Length: 493
Image (cartoon, rainbow, N blue to C red; front, side):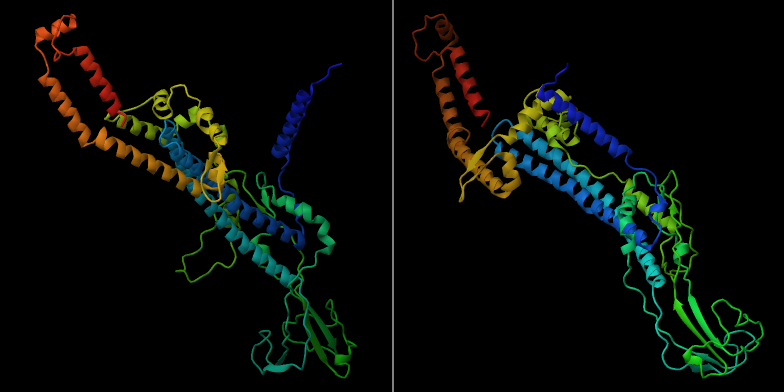
């Protein structure tokens, strides 16, 4: 029987779990299912989830990438400051330049990403408002008729072209619904919101088309007593129309001989699912061109084609991704344009002239101190373990990575002050004694003394042969060696 070691079987389980997760992520979505969004409640849940998804992508996703890259830049800036006086300083400065270069690209991507999402949000919110208004109208209840009708017209063509008599007007106030009772539909909410998550594979936007939102069904009730007059273009015999009744017994008109009472009961409309179809390819259909009216007409309802295009454009935008410095390879770093430019400038400075081009190995040698360097090991991972204690009140302790995350300003100030102290000390030490005017004067005096004590060619030849007895005759080899050591001392400073 095969037995797996603990580490082995744990690894096996992890692999299987990852495979299953990948299968779920790749194959879990399917095409849109209109049956899941088939009434006012499910349509409202669906559109609200679409809006939420757009908001989260527009802000959270892009901002996360920019903030992560900014944190990476702070890490390498702090490292470059900390190592400004040692051989790793150039490498960290190059890495900081690289991350800043990548951050600019991510920031540009984030701007385009957010613009696409805000455009889609604007159009979707516009459509959601229109849908909500249609729901409010369609689920409202009638108001009561109060008072008596008033004479609106006396003669003239007012209702029908053939009518030439006075008629009565009744004003009825209708209050739109402000809430929608979805208690009976609550079990369908999960399925409706899941449909809003299918933006990677959707073939339909499960919202009613614009044409459906421009229709209102008015439900009117009529009570009749007596016989209706036969008017030209008879709209229908009163006693035979559905919902109409000859000699109604309602108390309102019981005392009347001939009467007709009409009232709007509701604007009840039946939900008709007409999802917006998405084309298989391309960003979407082009909206029909509106006639040029000089800007006098305002679009009150976003066309289906514009909504479709905006949503497809937003959801197909790749989410900006930050640089993962923990997985950076040396080849990636050396191929970065900012690092290459940094290496070229550094090489030109060291050689005193511009360099046309450098190989990756040359870049590595110039910037990171070795042609075969492993930047991940020598420069990046190192920042997680190089703990230091900063003298302050209170005392600050941490690695470069931790300091960049929690105490960036304090750490930068500390290392800046340390670098300034070293610079001041070096300047004070080298200018008067080594690299300054006093040092130059002393060197010139020593050289003049050497010239005065210089022997003849024969004297020096005798010295080299060990036969010279004159003190002023100095060995050329020793003199040359001393001068070389002096130059080596001066050059780095």
